[in-house]
Image (cartoon, rainbow, N blue to C red; front, side):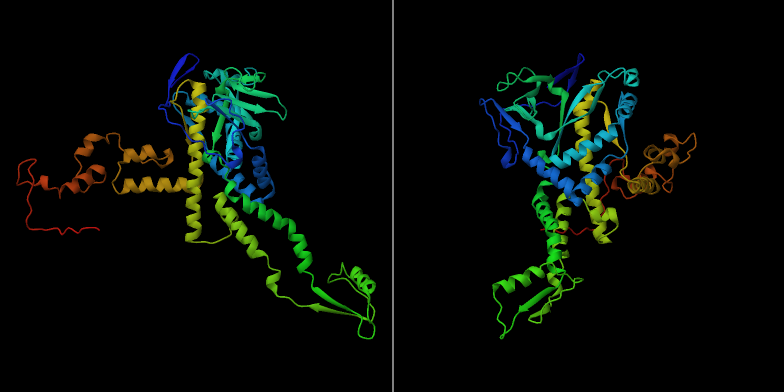
Length: 456
C-alpha cells in the first residue's frame, strides 16, 4: 500500500488476499445497515458506553484503576529519528503527555478512542512551524465515542468512511464522497483526519467486571437499608394478654408508634404491652466478606492491584507477583499506544516512518534494575566497558584510557577482564585448540566418556 503525504511516497505494510476478515463485536453491536454485500456499517453502542461511564464514575475501584494505569503508562518519553528534535518541540507545544493520558483513559473505558487531527494555527504555534515539520497537526480534539461509527468494505479491515451522529438525523462523515445511505451528510475532512486507537479488539477493560460492578452498585445502594435493619436490635412486642384481648386497631396503633425505635429512643407504653429485644448472631450483620469478594474480582478484571497503591494487602511473593504482572500490563498498553501514534499521527506529519516514540522508565526502581544488570554484565566480562558506557547514562560511565581499543584487546591475557578474555578462557577446552594437532583438526579424547540420557 502506498500513501502520499505532501508529495512524498511512504511504504507500509498493506493488505492482500481474498479471504473475509471476521469482526469481533458484542451482541448489541450488530450492524444496523447493510446497503449491499460490498459494505458494512458499524456504530458504537451508546447504551453500552453509558454503562462503562457509569462504572467509571460511580465505582471507586474502577475509576481509580483506570486513572492510575493511565498515569503509569504516560511517564517520560521522547522521539528518535531524523525529525526527533522537531517532534520533541511539537509534543511540548501541543501538550502531548496530557493528551496521551486522556487517550489511555478512553481506550480502557470504552475499548477505543476516536479523535480528529486538526491543522495547527500558525499564529498560535509559531515555534512548531519554525521546526519545519511537513504537516504539523493537533491531536487534542477527542470525539465522543458514543457518537462515532464507520463504514468498511466487507472484504477489508480498514474503514472507507468515519461517521459521527449528533442525536438527530444529521451526520458528519470523513472519507471520499458521501456514503450511499447519507447523501446529505456533511463532509468533515479526509479519512486520515480521524484516528481510532483500539484496545483489546474494541472491548472495554471494564467489560469483564461489568456484572460485578452492577452488583456492587446495588449493594452500596442497599447498605443504608441493611444498616437500619440489622444494626439496630430487633424488638419483639407483645400486645395484650389473656384477660385483655387486643383487636387489630390496638396492634396497628402500637406498630405505628414503634416503627422508628432505635437504641437511643425511649419508648413509653402501657402495662398491657410487653417488649423483648431478640438476640442475633454477628454473621447476620457482617457484610465485609461479600464486599471483599466483589472487590477482589473487580481488581482481577481491571488488572490493577490497588493494594500496591495504598500499601495494603499481602506482602512477600504475592505482592511481588502482582507488581510484575502490572508492569507487563503497563508495557503492553505502551506498545499499543506507540504503534498507533507512529502509524496514524507521526508518519503523516513527517512523511516517513523512520521517527519512533521512545518510552522512558515507568518508575525509578525499573531504572535502577536495568543499570544494575548492565554493570553486572560488564563485571562478569559478558560485555566490554565501551559497550557498557553506551548503554548506561553518562553519570555511570567508566573512565577508560584514550588508547583503550581493539589493539589492546588482542594483547589481553586470559586472566584479563572483558569479553575477549572470556572467549580465550573458553578456548582452553575447545578440541580444535590443541597444540599437538594441526590447525582445524579435532582432538579425539578417549579417556573421558559422557552418558547420554533420553528425555521422555
